[in-house]
Length: 314
Image 1 (tube, rainbow, N blue to C red):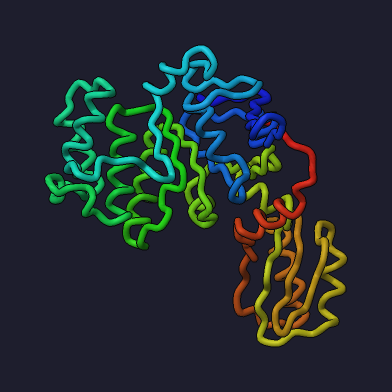
Image 2 (cartoon, rainbow, N blue to C red):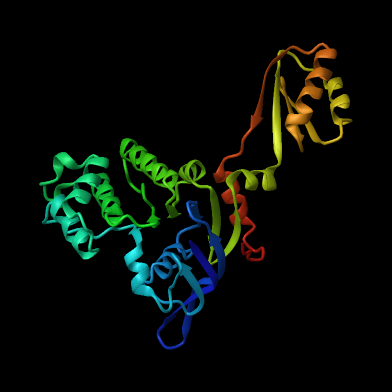
């Protein structure tokens, strides 16, 4: 649904100064995929979204969205995608109902009143439909902007910081809504600084800083950067128990921390039973066993620190 080939955008400031924003971005996002685009402020994420939605043109390279070229078929792209910008522009003096009606007509929606009512109800704004948008909270305006992006039932949705500055209840509603959209087979390209949100919602993530540094599922990136660690919580622990565990093929490291045995493993599902048998035979009382799960924040920070690596393409 979204493909880019060496997509590049360089801004010119004054007569001579060039500022690279996006360099050689090559990626492929499949139908129904929720893709998280992560990177620090100024990394070029919003510029990428603007190119993919044909709001600005690239300096070089090419991209296709819904089968349309961003260079030759920009109007088709703008008609076929939904977009939530970080600062959505709404008519503050008009009601929520009037705002959505205007945009539904611009998109040539067939059943304008039906579509407007559908999304106002789905996002919990129906009871405020006649109120001026200028009196809405940040969260209410954000939900209204999401409704606006969905009026014409786009197959591809671009979301730039969809839960930015929302209170926990509103953010939870928006996240649930995004998950539901993904389950419907829509393709979602989401820029976010909320790494826990990206971990929960995204099938794959791309970590970006002018160029693409990493791209994979959150779980695959965890294994790449940190491997898998299992923690055996023991009533008491003896240093002498470590030797038998270290001798197992596939055990990469063993640490004894207080009464916890931390083991780096290639295949916990295979090795955990063997380790438990060794510990029980040695007289250990095992209280419980759990896998240490690194956060997406750990992966992100490690990747950004190593940002001198070569760009990748998938």
